[in-house]
Amino acid sequence: MSTKPRADAERNRARVIDAARALFAERGDDVQMPEIARAAGVGVGTVYRHFPDRQALVEAAAEHRFAEIEQYARAHCFGEDSGLERYFRHVGEVLASDRGLTAAIDSARGRPGSEPRGSARERLEIVVAEIIAHDQAAGRLRSDCTVADVYLLVGALSSVIRKGGDWVRFLDLLRDQLST
Image 1 (cartoon, rainbow, N blue to C red):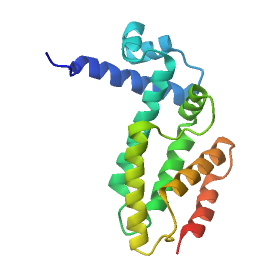
Image 2 (cartoon, rainbow, N blue to C red):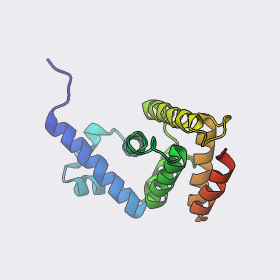
Image 3 (cartoon, helix red, strand yellow):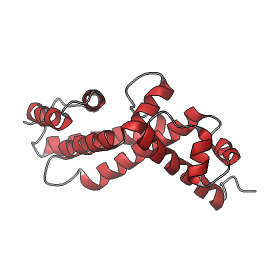
Image 4 (tube, one colour):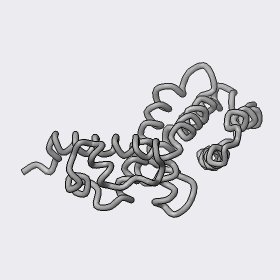
């Protein structure tokens, strides 16, 4: 007997996550499981079969967002220009356009700062370390920049966006400080 989920179950799970992300983006933390089920075109029992509670669904949506950021980083942050700058800009665009999901993550976790956890964090740390090494080897990034610094700076970027500040200006200032 296989433990691999059926294809239709995987499709339903993906539909639920997509619907949740869209609703969170539109309305922030003010979204309930039955609404997500309706938007996904599944029964509420299907939602609860995949996600035992709302927090589990929010975490899955967060994991999905972090996986997309990782994919972007791998595909677009190793060129001739600063990969780290490109990474920060992409993260800023994601956070600015998806404030509702950020609010839902913050609410589910009981604090601001929607940084990744678990395997999503490990995968992002690997790619960020690769970007840092690439930029340092090319002479585009100060030699003392670390993955921990990047997480700290993404947290600051998130705070600027949450408070409605000029995050693009923040990144311009940040670039000037990180460049060699």
